[in-house]
Length: 101
Image 1 (cartoon, one colour):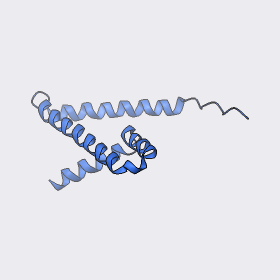
Image 2 (tube, helix red, strand yellow):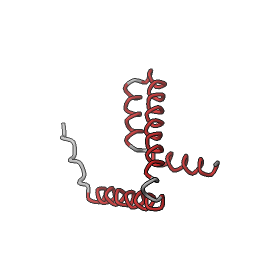
Image 3 (tube, rainbow, N blue to C red):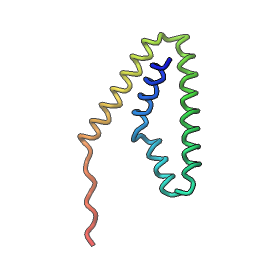
Image 4 (cartoon, helix red, strand yellow):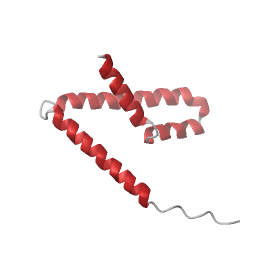
């Protein structure tokens, strides 16, 4: 049990670093620093709820699809997204320089 907890925690923690959720929270906190506790609580609840939905559907889908197939599909999807992000990073055009005053 502890190993699955640590594996899940580590994977989700690393996956969430620098993602849109974290950037959104940073944006809210930068515009309303006095509300940082509420921002933290709301984002924590949102992540917990979305995780609960994912766990529920993950358990339900195994009634129809073997876990190995789910892992393979998830792995392929992550690789495809990674390749798309890498392509975008290598072929991104730099922003134009700011106009001189």
